[in-house]
Length: 406
Image 1 (cartoon, rainbow, N blue to C red):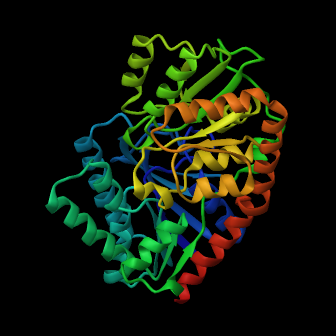
Image 2: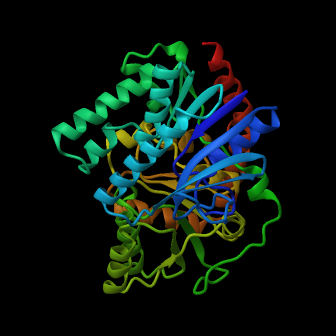
């Protein structure tokens, strides 16, 4: 089967972005299918192509995946209007590909929600089966975050969401709450599967060279956050906890923020203004370097803004990277991940917007390293038992390819 795969932010492990689509496409190829990946040029990602663009497009084969990269740059630092324009351009250029290429099934994954537009048109104008993967619920998340407040825009996004779900022969939700959200829009339960992000156990356990950034002693407790520094991430909570720890004289606990994003300069300015000696910032790193950093760290930070839509409606890559590396996780909001962390005893779940409780958890981690290591062992076991990417990829391939018959 030939699958036309739409993911605007596609990246291989050579980049510093999530690699779910890379791993799923690779598994399709391994199972004998042909995959054409249609993507843009994501700032943190690497598609594997480095030749010149011709008429705004470059093509090539990367690890068995046929890649069509559109010359559409995107960065997490871009403003709302620029990002929206890039989303629209990607949808338009992808639509032309969807209407002209020869293929058997179209697959589209968010974000953005507009990634589904070419597959919707292919479904209704060319009769191509369409499978839709939902990584975040739109427009619920931007509405609750206050990012989008215009009623007309929210109505348009809601209509696109409904049309995407109803046009797809099958849907995939990356968390239980996302799957429930799809079904609330009238999609039959039999057409919805929950297949969460997975753990790249081979990458994180293949004897990585452990390292720590300058300024972190071997005896320090190192808690690391890896990901976007944006509105959704609520990283002021980390600085709030750092302030409490510093006031308590706990300079032996270091908080490392790795990544990029629109709010990073403001976070750096605040840390400098408050003279937070226990907070460090580091640019994004590729998966190999990330594995080494995880090997040198003591704790992973799963941080999000206190927004109810996040509680059950997200499936963050970083959480699965942490447990793949055998790191215990500190989570600062309620929901399915907090429930799992508490149920598996593989980290700490603290209340949102509670800097003292956040700091208390870090002090407990530093005080009993043996107990912390045991939590990390349970995190590693959880990764292997429930979230091994290779097992989830086979489940994903079965669900997607059988969609042609639906």
